[in-house]
Amino acid sequence: MVLLKLLSFTIVSYLGYHYCSTLFENDRFFSHLSTLEREMTFRTEAGFYYMFYKTIVEAPSFLEGWKLLVNDSGTEAPSHINTLQRFNVYPEVMLGGLFRVFRNVVTSLDMMSYFKECYGIDRGDGMGQVQSCVGAGDLSVFYVNCIFALFGLQTGISFLMGCHLSDNILGGILATSAFFFNYGECTRVQWIPPLRESFSCPFILLQILLVSLMLKSGHSKVRKVSLVLATICCALPWQFSQFVLFTQTLSLFGSYALSFLNKDQLSPVLDCVLWLLYRHSLPVPQHHAHQFHVRLSVSGI
Image (cartoon, rainbow, N blue to C red):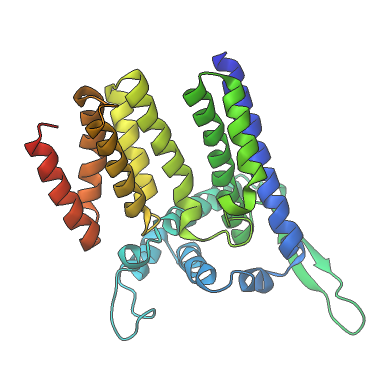
């Protein structure tokens, strides 16, 4: 049964990735655009976030790119700001560093031709050809494909959550089917890939799955560490994830108040989630989290 679930998870994840990337390609014709035109498809804040990824990739070194982001004088000139903390561009830093490593490795192995193919596109009468490159070796293609891969992971996690909550693989199939039938209400990643929630939502679902697992099957050190890491990964990229976590905490405490959960079930989860919520940098939820944590401590949780 475990092997069947893992195989189904892999298939569902790939289907989510393929479906999302196909919708994006059909809408933008991304593979047949020049590099400049691809960057122009990232409208409004999407282009803003992509700029930081490109800064990391095109800097002389990763460290130089990092310094440009933590001491940015161009975004809010003449002020110097730390764009990592101000705009939650940690995913762009990680993807930029990953692309640099990938590019250096395949170049040193003389394998770039396997990952990047360039060709000329005829635009019609009176218009010259433009060069377009496809494959993981192109920085914009690498960027959107990583986001779509995360969305595929999100789809797979929704399948695992359905399996876990129903104790049946049919529950996972039902959850995945509902996800695809309500696709337009579930995500915007197929239209605007670089949005912050595109990076955060897969880890939010993973965090919810881990919380459910700890409440239903007990906690262990591995599960606690996994919960902390998943919570960090969903909190860093998206500035509004703190409200999701705070709502989750209120829901858990409400379940405890109604005697659906006992102290032994709830305490390990709150130890992980509330501390991270309290340590988050935005002031209002931090204040509420602190007050909530004090009251829980007084009540013995």
